[in-house]
Image (cartoon, rainbow, N blue to C red; front, side, top):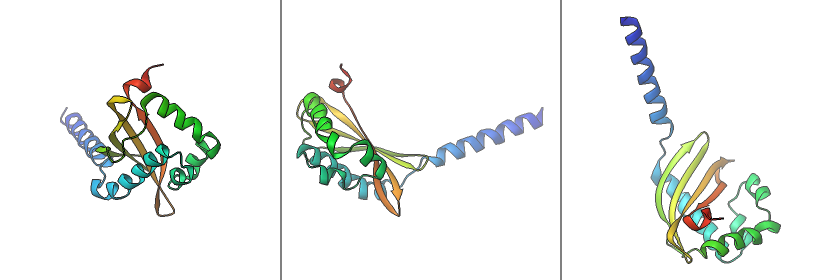
Amino acid sequence: MKTKVLLVSVLLVTLILTFGCASKVNVEEVRSYADPMTENLLVAMNESNYANFSKDLDSRMKKAIPESSFPNLISQINGKIGKYVTGSKEFQKAFMTKQYINVVYKAQFTEEPEGVTVRVVFVKVNDEMKVTGLWFDSPKLRKK
């Protein structure tokens, strides 16, 4: 009985330490690259400027959003939530999943009064941080 209690206690402590520490990120360090890169992505979308939009993307993202499909992405976003209000993004949180750093912002767009959640995912490629994921969420985007 004492062995079982001790074993369960050790397992619980191990799980807490493993999961409690695994997702910690240095928020200041993450924001030092994430804030300007995210602002650049959003402003480049406003300007329909693929060169600026893609400059921080990793190769997977460039394949997922090639220049030929960029206008379609812009029209889907602008058509539902309008344009990004430059400088309006507010940092919400940053967390790690596997080798990816997820950064979540709340941003204002001209046609979405509720605000838009913008999640940008970063990965280290050759000692440089690159964007490997980009998601938008808002009430208007969830409507069909």
